Image 1 (tube, helix red, strand yellow):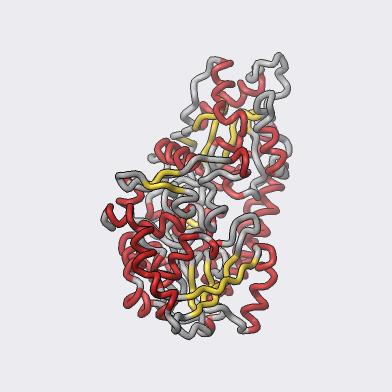
Image 2 (tube, helix red, strand yellow):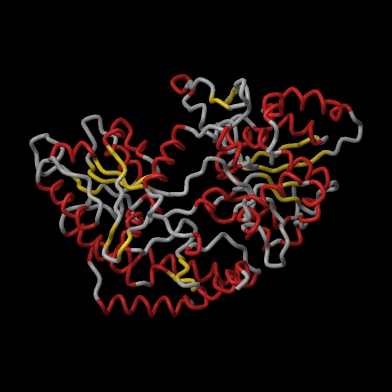
Length: 518
């Protein structure tokens, strides 16, 4: 843990101690490519990134590529071999890109051992931050990150408390009780406008909208997947959750909701913009139950929605999808920085990368620099500066503006995070959700961690997953609307096997056993 004094005086000390680097004739120049939000200032122009250059004794030449442009350019850059010295930001280069082009990237283990003391500390405290970027050859080619103030839960369920109060109903705690409340919402003029036909008991997004949609209810049947993939680990065995009877129960329940008019008829197609507008209508929300990141998405009606904590479903405990390690490290094994073979001074590159992995610098990398986003009080506690959303159009804590948002590099220590580094207002609301669902989250043993495969296994897993994802999308939409028969379910299981499901499971099982030492 860094001393509090260093937190308070970090800016002054860095400037005074390292300014001489900028005057040296032999300062290494590093070309750094980053995906960049065009709405934001270029990060190289921010004070904390300027200080990073001085502290590491390097000169950074930034190449900024917008997200849409990078989707097209990435394959061209990798195919041409015209590489930067460093790929920067967790949505720039994925470990699978490195795996497919391993000859372009240098292993970083020895560099971290010599120049990356702060990265080593992160790896020791949060081993998942290293596992997520460790290749099958045992080497690390991209440095990960561990985001501060991340929740354990992904999506929460929120019920319309105003509707409950209007009808004199208690908040349900079991799935059976929830069903009775939804029926009351449908039949008893829950919004109090005199019309018993305009309430939507559940206002749901399409199941293709990830966990924000109807997928969030899967845990009520113990069929949830925990953030990263469709797998769970049951008794040490990797299990494909959409091939379980619990998953079928969830499908049948959603079809029952649709038949009974307890969910919006367009639940398989409703887009986010329309859904948000219906939630935030000035005359009151149209929905009685929603699933979302936080109730902020209900806009002006957000205070009408309170957390719904269903404790019991038909198979026992009801779960919510969650996985703090994946959410903090970044799903899909994103890496925050990788060094290519074009870099003539890897040592200097690692010094610069390592800079972001202490408390003071990780804090600024997370949300933005002191003086623009934070001020530090006399106790070394970081405080967000006055919000100017009305004039700027962004909140001072919107981490996409003065930093890279979810692309961020760095970490902060647990002690610093707890005592000195404030969560944003949205993160505070997520902590409330975490508290509500602390008994509804799976043990870590259930969760398949982020991991990287050898090239052949990775290619085969991607091939199988592509076919399976298409089948899941088609069948879910069909079964929600039309229901499912035994014959259809059995045919579906046969299709999964023909697509290579057992091989897919085996790929994950073998790698999981390697990681867990089984």
